[in-house]
Image (cartoon, rainbow over all chains, first blue to last red; front, side, top):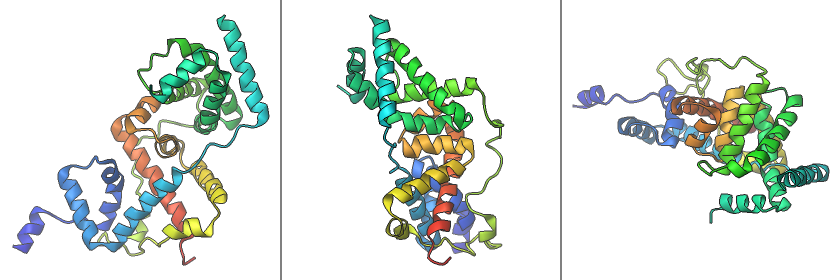
Length: 89
Length: 196
């Protein structure tokens, strides 16, 4: 029975699982792929760690803030806008 | 009223602070994106042209996309027509594994499993320094991966918006995102793993 189950529903190996992480996080895996991925995670602490690291990578990358404009640039852009406004009128 | 419509209204009615705050918000992200299409000396010029084009196009902007998507599309079109600094036709289909294949055994299982680093990133490095490091890593990504990661993960655009800005198919967008994020994860691991 177990063998038959595995034939029908072959498990993923880690090297395949890491390639599915983005699809998993994007929600673009098919139902079957998602179930295989999740089933793999249940038995694999390393891939579970890997998934957590990918989430952390996304979180830390997402915290980058634009750097402030220099006062000189702020002035330049204010001028640019004023020129544009005067062209409009 | 959504924030975009409100901002547009202020821009059209002559509120220069609205324009400066728009520049403040998007100038640097646009520079970073432009620098992946053209040499950085030219990127500044491309971004300035984009602001001019945006001001000129403001009246005709119809809000079919978000203001942000609209701005980045102008930028990408300008950057592309200014000329590419590198061969951009590298096919997405070229295999590029998420993890170095030598880290897996013959059975496809981890031989050299991921080293834990999650807490270390923030506890071992001060926030400003960490941000500088991540910016530098983004600069090391291949241009097309960098473009997608910048727009998706730094700018927080949806995959649909990124496909529209960069003229990518959904599938290619996902492949580039996957490779870019995978490389970044590896860089975090190299930097912060406990066992050096």
